[in-house]
Length: 322
Image 1 (cartoon, rainbow, N blue to C red):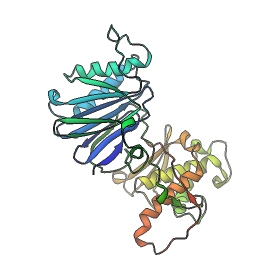
Image 2: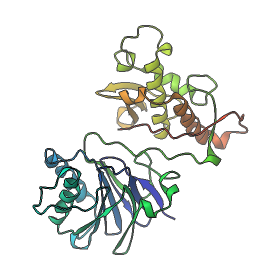
Image 3: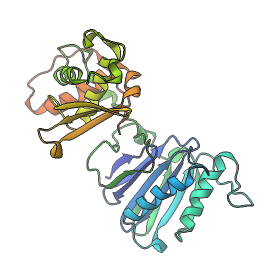
Image 4: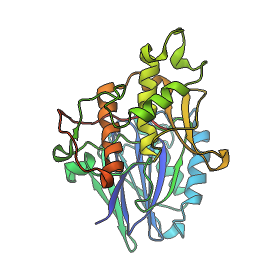
């Protein structure tokens, strides 16, 4: 059975059709561009904020990623657009009102490439391909659990994905899958407590937050008493664990609106993880702690001999990475 990979806002993803299905949801004004060709599937979740005023910028990125996708002969590419607003063309092309403009503009964009697209109505979809056939299963007709459990996102490696790019400067990866009830994380311990399995990484990140970090603005005392610093360190700990960074980091830096951690002695081979600083402050410490425990325990599982059962906590927190 193919992996399922969920595409986030303003992401463009291409996968080997023999290894992965691509899917997305949350299409409230946004449009899913679904393509297949040359044994591949491609999907982009185009933000509803794409309009006539910024179309030229979006089009440049869409053209770039389309060219890089390796879908083969345009005359053989299959295309479907999915959106919640449905197919409502204007008698005068380009004069559609409100949310009806974007799906029609994307349809015109594909037509310029000699690709005929249909528009289907729903707030989500999953695509697969076999031979010359593209199958677009609307969310309302699909298995509901596919959109909740056991999928990959742009944060994950593999899964048959051959291209993973952004089409704007502010992409948002799909939310993390919900942990199945049978796999709920067994922890009631917070990341800032020494008993938490990822506390060492958390403390290292907290200690290495730069003095001029936005997370420390207005705080001159012990950073372990600073709410925003603790939240930021917790969110960055989860981001690191998701990137395969365990134990400690070499650097923590702020670049613009992002806080970035790096592991590796040489800059050219360093592995990085990042979070949007302002977003991190708003995340639940309880959920971040549970997510971090799950990731750390999964990593440590081969060497563990026993675990101490404590209260369970379901996890559904999404950390925004860039």
